[in-house]
Amino acid sequence: MRISVLGCGRWGSFIAWYLSRRGNKVYNWGPAGDPSYEVLKKTGRNEYVALDEKITLTCDLREAVEHAELIVISISSQGLREFMGRIMQYPVEGKVFVLCMKGIECGTGKRLSEIVVESGVSPADVAVWVGPGHIQSFVQNIPNCMVIDSLNEALKRELVKEFKSDLIRFYYGEDLLGTEIGAAAKNVMGIAAGALDVICPPLKGPLMSRGAREVARLIKAMGGNELSAYGLAHLGDYETTLFSPYSHNRKYGEMLAKGERFDKLAEGVSTSAAMRILGKRYGVDLPITDAVYNACYGRGDDAKRCKEELGKLFKRPEKTEMYN
Image 1: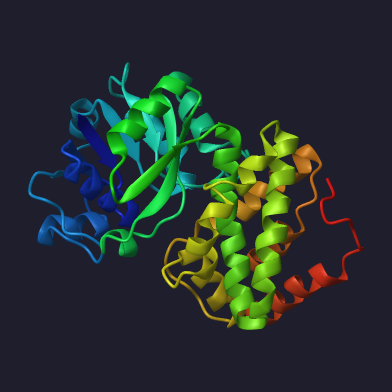
Image 2: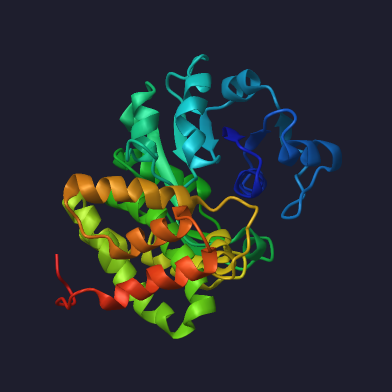
């Protein structure tokens, strides 16, 4: 299959590496001048993978789009709408779009698949690929499970057949809305986990339980299946996000609670803002999300603010465990 992976950061370069090993003709696109692209162009590798010689590295977006039968997008979620506007300048009819990224658009609360469809792509040609796993583990041949979801049942099955291997076991998602919200929301919980690593590590167990319940309430209110919060896209990704030393979001929360700055992308920061929009829109109580948002966007001493916001969760009125 002819595949173009748009994005050459840690996930984009890994996906290109992985899909090339599956026998596909892979292009990996990155913007000229971007540090990630320039490192790959100069050395053929980055801190995660070495690109196979069969992979074509390009900064020409037209070339990458025209090459592909299937386009995988792996960029920062907040840049997707603008990026889709660039992609749609080229013929894309009949091409499949797979989003290997997690987030919710700030300002609108839109899911990423909604943004792609609003850009002019048929819903039947859009899928998401999410779930647990770190590149650092995959490249050591440590396997994991992931999920592919789409409104198109046939497309889900085709993609799983094409992508599966001994390294990644795929499952068919059954709720695109819940899969996307769950995948994005786990990054918010990752920030909370990192802060708790500094403030009170034993509370990470309750965070897993209460975090999943919080996300389940939101998914249900939006019209999805609340059980999706307990699937691979959300709860299944907790080990990777809440405990792993490789997790950007956990590390962001840890450093925030120490009063330090993390200089890499942590999608949970913007996602906390987007989830607050959804919580207000659908009338859903999101206390952990609110605490993370206030910790990330508040003013003053970061470490003190983190401790105060997480402490407020203990002062909330008592509730039944499974309240809606």
